[in-house]
Length: 323
Image (cartoon, rainbow, N blue to C red; front, side, top):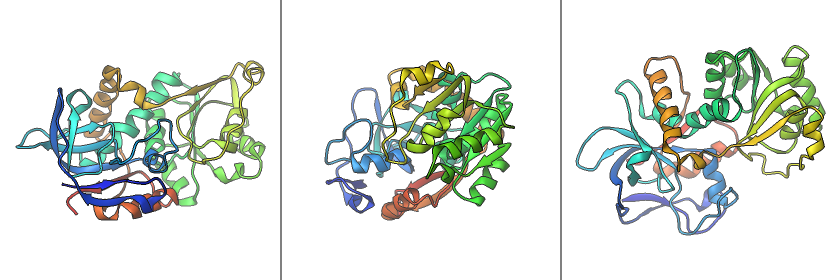
């Protein structure tokens, strides 16, 4: 089968398309023909070996797929512990969900990792209450574009999205954001970013921030929180050091910093079932609109990673293993 393999760590240049044996199927798994593979920002960390879990070479990146069982059957979307950038995958049956006919491959892949993350950020980690203000960092991205929509649907009083271009900020407003902020304000001084977030919230501190950048964006977001505000961090896109948060800084305003990594839900599949059931239903009904960020041939995987790293994309990027 054709697959993308990494034999050395680095940038997009280490992503090689090669021929490999089909994966072996273990207990509780099914071999699937992959119709579409998902790309996530975390994959760029995996390629560098700079993410939360150390990687072992050689490896096939990719944590999600849409496909059908070899020999025929129901189309499913599933989560993987690697191996997704390939024509075939051996998937855990407990981490696969049937895709309704009205939901496209791209839409399903938007939901399985990024959608489930957005769902749990708001429900499980932030405990969003009706009327609270929510800041979504990178609101035009895969997670952010869904978090903006879900926050509005679940009763947020004001949704503020950050995005790096006027076009992306306009997109977040189309998705439901009440106001937008340019994250570049944090580049020189996080205080400018704090002031911009509060201004976007009518001059008041904010209740919830969903943060995936780190560095000055993290610091500026934390300072923008109201008493009992929650900052949920789920990424390290800036690849820069984030200053430690002393306990006193949290106590002074009764603020909380919460970390979230979807991998911890793998051992509790019922947490994923709850998210996927609702997200697939909302999408099939047209009430949730995942953003298709582009379909790349497997042979163009390096280009896909380059575009993602350069912030040239919005929404969900996917790979076509047949090309």
